[in-house]
Each structure stands twice: as structure tokens, then as C-alpha cells.
Image 1 (cartoon, rainbow, N blue to C red):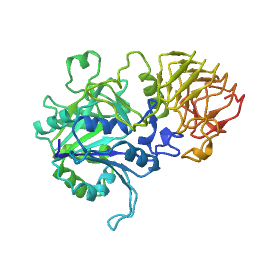
Image 2 (spheres, rainbow, N blue to C red; image 1 turned 45 degrees about the horizontal axis):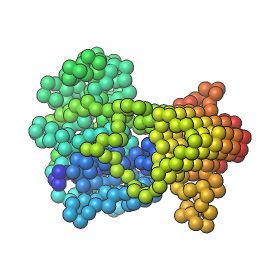
Image 3 (cartoon, helix red, strand yellow; image 1 turned 30 degrees about the horizontal axis):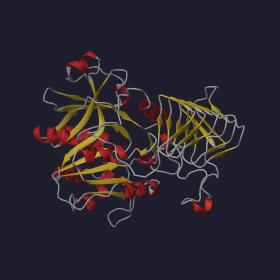
Image 4 (cartoon, rainbow, N blue to C red; image 1 turned 90 degrees about the horizontal axis):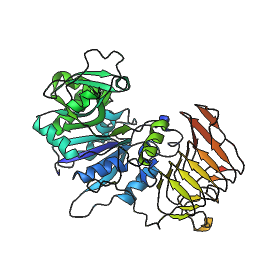
Length: 420
């Protein structure tokens, strides 16, 4: 796939993922204990033999830049790269990215210097495994100008997506943004999807454009700033736009609830999405950490990342991030502990980062249930973090509640005996 370049959209301010996006871009949010969300599309690209990859971002991009630089260094034989393109002022534009299409429009000078026939446009906050080679082959076989990856959904889920209607040749004939009336919006789908009632095709926000077509769409419609709401619906009327039906697992991680559910999904014995696929591995920063250590602890249906230590604690249906230290008597259930950037016993003078509490640990006797604990958090002994009252939204002192899930922000230091 040397004649294809990939553009990964870093998204906007990520307000629906706040406070996880308080200090980082959406694609840089830690995921599954040791990864970042950006690792999903980048890994899919590498596994699909696409090695010219651009990541477009403008909000809180410093940690994303570091992660990309530390994780993805291509060898000289492939001539590949993963490059971050941040919003910048130029003579052509003084404005920040106004939407997905505008981000690509402003970044075109960086992309056009590389030879390519097709442009693959991806989102930086989704969970799925896809061989993009099959998608691009489908695009070329159909002779399409634009191809939109779609996933079949049920009538209950359809109003939350952009719904595309196709004919028997996969040609998209109609587009409806989050329709409430689904009359006549069914599309031909595989028999297995039809049996499940998944007869509506939702856009995955994954597109393939023939190179000249992309430039033409962006140049001819300079006021159109979004692919899903403007560029694609208009193109249906005067270009050949086809659907690529995808029947694998796919999740859009746009809210605290969807992020929480996606993480805990991976801890299940047989999850619908697997990070153990040898043919499609998930890449990330190789930190060279020691194995996790379990000292008389009870761990069930959980992911435990390297460098972690668990002392006579109980962990159930949870995701434990790198370098986590969970003290004796602590109980962690249905929670995400993102871990730390340094071991808790490391003196501050020897740490690379000057931020974070002196003891980023889960203290003795703590109870954490239904929560997300961001990186470098210290939780004092005997604290209870559990939304017993069922509050849905709240901004507190060193904690937030979103979608009923308690979120402890990065670098917070919770005093002993705190009850949330």
C-alpha cells in the first residue's frame, strides 16, 4: 500500500471525555492499561502495510506528540513515518481547524509532497480491528470516488449515527444525520446481519478518497468544514460514493461511558474485541518494565499491566495500568486504574516529571468501585470512591462524576479517609 497515505483526525477539544482530556488530546488518552487511543488506528495502518501516517491535532497535543515520537520509529527500508500535524497559522489561513474537512484542507501542503493515489481518513478515538487493504481494494474495485466504511446497526441504535442507504452494488444513494424516522432507510446487508435486525448502515467516520477527488471536494467547497455533515452528503449527488460494509466489532469512544465500557470489555474472559491477535497486534511505546507482581492478592476477570504490584488486595473486573501499586486490604471492582509515570518509591529528585503526588498508590483498605482513576493519582488509606447515591453529573473537589462514573483526574492527591 505504498500508494496510499493515512490521515488520523485527532478530534476537537474532547469535551465529552473531560476530565480525561483536561490536559491531553483525545487520541492520547490512556487505554487498556498500557496503550493510548491513537495506537488503534496507527496499529491498523501498520498491520495493513500503510506506513505514511499523519496525525492531525490542535488541542493539548504535547503528550500525543511525545507518545508518537517514542512509539513509532520506522526503519529506513520502509521509508515510513507517523507524523503529527498540528494546527498552524499560514498565509492561506490564520484560523484553527474548523472541522474534520478543514483540518485536512489546511494540512494538504504537508500531504501532497508524498506520492499517493488514495487517501485514507481515520478517527483517533475508535476501537476496532480492520485490514485497511481490503477497504482500499474494495474502493478501487468499485471504481469509487469516495468509499465510506459502514457498520450495520439496529433500529434502536440508528438514531445515534449518520445513516447511509445503499443499493445492491454498495452505491450510497441517501444520507441521513441521526434520523428519528427510519422509514425506507434499510439497506441490503448480509443474512447474518439481517437476522439480528441490523439493517441500517451507520457511517464509521472512516473514508477513502481518490487523491484528485479529495482535493477537488475541498477546493470546490471552501465553506464546508466537516466530512460527515457536509462533504460526504454533497458528494453523493454528483460522485460515485460507495459503502464498505464492516461486520467486525467497532466502538466509538466519544464519552466517559463509552470509554469506561470499552476498557472493561477487554477484561472479560472472551471479549468481542481482542488485543491478543497475533496477525493484527496492537503497538505502543515499549517501556521495558518488569512483570506485574501479585503478592497474595485475588485477581479475577481483569487486565494487569507490567510494572504493577498488588499486595493482599482484591481486584475484580478491572483494568490496572502500568506501575500501579495497590496496597493490602484494598478492593478495586469494575474500575479503571490508569497507573503512573513513575514508581511510588522513586524520590522526586529522580523523577522525569515534577508533577504528581509523592505516593501515587491505592492506599491500604481503599474501596474503589465503578470509577476511573487517571494517571499519577494518590488515594489515601481507607478512602471510599463509590457513587452510592447514583449521581449522574457532578464537579467536586479533585473528582468529577460523568455518566454516573466517578473520575479522579490526573495528578490528584486524595487524602486518607476520603469518601466520595
